[in-house]
Image 1 (spheres, rainbow, N blue to C red):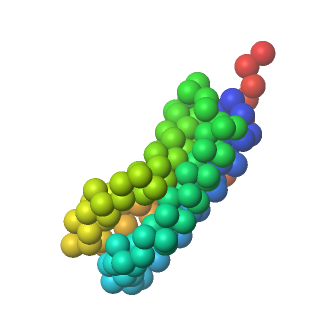
Image 2 (cartoon, rainbow, N blue to C red):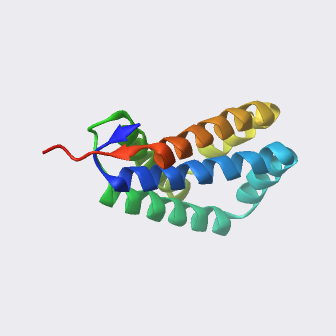
Length: 135
């Protein structure tokens, strides 16, 4: 996949590996997802720290990468924005987001398999892609 910046490629690799690893963790132990949601519901401090970290990571990526000039750049930018928004939601009002997480428990293997495939594709797009600057 061609993009304009090497940054887009490296961020796609990193986001893809993160998504792949998180998905494989749930695929290997679907009950882990239930434990994660339970832990966040039981501990406002953990939810708060998770929100701070998610916002910081999403905002940092979005701060250096907010390009919408090709499909891969669009995906990376959207992912950064979504991660930052998720962090803000966890800080402001985590209940609805945790309810979504709880609802996904019944199909944890299905969405984890989809997330693993998406992560693999995102990683490969970054790893095998080319950055061609427009002159």
